[in-house]
Length: 352
Image (cartoon, rainbow, N blue to C red; front, side):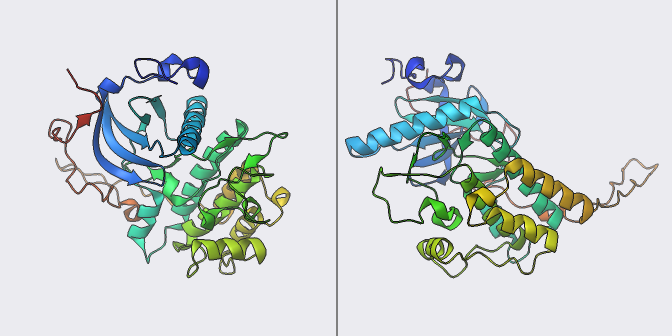
């Protein structure tokens, strides 16, 4: 599969050589996340702070082949698309294990951020700003013919200042084709579009039709969650939520939303995928809502002072709501580059 030095075959993976990382220069630090198929660590690559996703290889030959295929697709897509609201791809290697290296975002997942605020809700401008970040990332993916299929708060990461959201984890992303059907393998039920599972339970590897509008549905559920800071379909298990959405057309309540905002949310989670807007339309609707319903806050002029101690301008409303803690996985105070301990790093291969 790979060459003797552990790098991808560029012919097999269609990956430009500039994306091939040298595993001997990759140092892995503390774990910052874990999913069903991979673990994510903080680390360094060539003295750059990075996030390192290590993909489990699987146990059986079939499982190994399936995970290698998913890994290859994710790497191919990450190397093709670049956007300010997509986590920046740095490189990948296949040996001694399957690894994807991206920029390190220190703001934590959107899931952890929302949990840290409960029972309070986000400032509405912040919520819509995050929704615009997500919609722009999805617009970029769809313009490249890529469906994400796993849009949920766990896959949305905040920058260190917690003012910008970036989309991560392309493990379930697929290229859209009008002539091909896609496998029934999908993302988390609670955020999944009903058409992904609404006929009968599909056997593994079986195919069914769907298109990029599955991401619009997931976006609607995320937007609802951004506004309410509650788990969608609260009180239901993931499977109960999926059944209710698919067979009873149940959705989270939008009754308490302003009319314009309710219209955006409900249009995105319509049962008929073709009736849902695309992300270019969603962006325009969100911008219109911001400009008409949520006018800009007045800008307070900074106070002037003649003393040596400058007086800072007052914080705008909502600023404090953005000041959540960074990952709670690593419970150490933030240190400068010189102060950061290096003893916890290890490398895949002996370092010289």
